[in-house]
Length: 313
Image 1 (cartoon, one colour):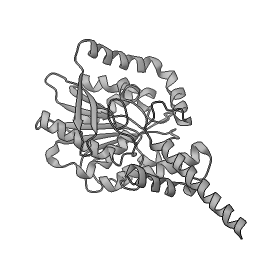
Image 2: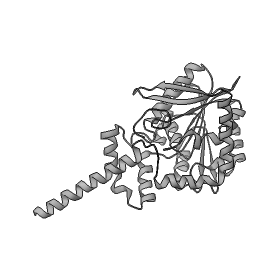
Image 3: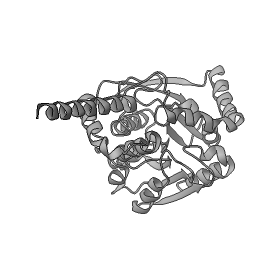
Image 4: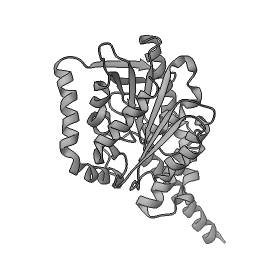
């Protein structure tokens, strides 16, 4: 009996330790991401180097001309958040753009943002908590990042009163924006949302990635991982979902997803689209993996966004 108890205790200790390591791998801030997902992303981007370089050069030119401003705000938790602001003289509105999980604006936003500047928008490119120059220790998969979106919207409301705001995000950035929708009030002047490759919930996304990338059953680990999230990082992976947060909103939403996305399955966007009762449109891009629909077909992507934005004018 003693031996049996020792074996059970050791198994439980191993389980707790394994899930703690998993929590730290997926949520704790890291300066460099060496995960299988990161390597897959880098390989995916290689064929589009010229297009990516074009966007980077546009930003570099703006820096040289001193047309890029660093912006900092403090959120309710006391974290200092960073963004860059590129003001467009006589702008028709402001577009806030949010990057993805363990990513940067340089990778996710720079390649395409100049198109929206050319359409007459000023740009606010934010660093999520834990990313870039923003404070933060833990990634919360959109749960607390959605609070930060509201903080940034309030900043824009104060700086540019009565100016139209468009919220655009990729991957976790898109999910964070959608998760913020139930707290966006009419007077905040958010006139449209562009959600590219969003997942419905952090809980289901982490479970899916455990299944897909590590080839082990995610359901065995996800609930204990979530307990570590609550105990250590003070957030619940089930705390927010896009569908719940969008339930009573009427903000026009453009949903975009690559049909070949194996990081966030396109079913996430299809379900979100079908459940949303407000004004909506969905675009599914052939031969596009996670977050690269713009790179696969830039003309169609930009023209579709332009058409979506023009409807609100």
